[in-house]
Length: 189
Image 1 (tube, helix red, strand yellow):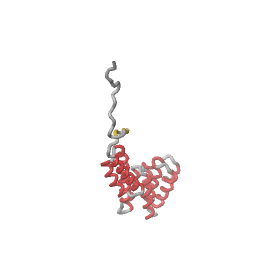
Image 2 (tube, helix red, strand yellow; image 1 turned 90 degrees about the vertical axis):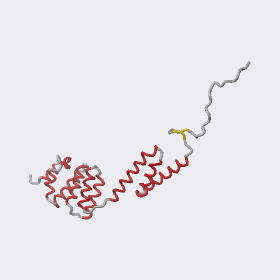
Image 3 (cartoon, one colour; image 1 turned 60 degrees about the horizontal axis):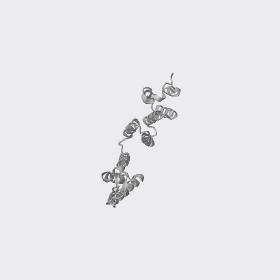
Image 4 (cartoon, one colour; image 1 turned 135 degrees about the vertical axis):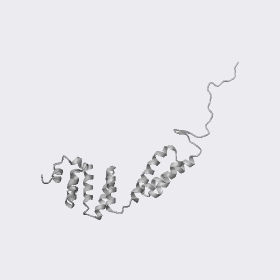
């Protein structure tokens, strides 16, 4: 006699929430996810086109609502927007103030930004010996011996006190073994 049918396997109920993905289930708010993605794309386009004043608030707003997988990237873009905005807003009351800023950039390892500021000062004053000295330090720190020697020679030509300063400047440490550097600093020897 046949007995009652028993199921050897239990069946799972059908999912009503949608297909599974790596982070969990896709929620019914996929429409909002698509909107977030569109906002993200607009903010990235604004940043890439140099419109940091528009991209910055867009990334800040996204940071509050974006899924976790976007937050690291949004923070990175937000930091880039802030840095670029600050760079564009920097104003100086004198060339000396801009020089101090360039040296601070140099000391922080922002060599290209420092170079840009030093070159900008030279455009306004071709005889700024301290700028040639700063460019010589920059060249020394970046391993460009020839440029270092040329810039330092010009700084010394414009102001002989730069020779004395360079003798004890640890920023020229990379040049210490170069006989041309020694000859430039001690021509009487």
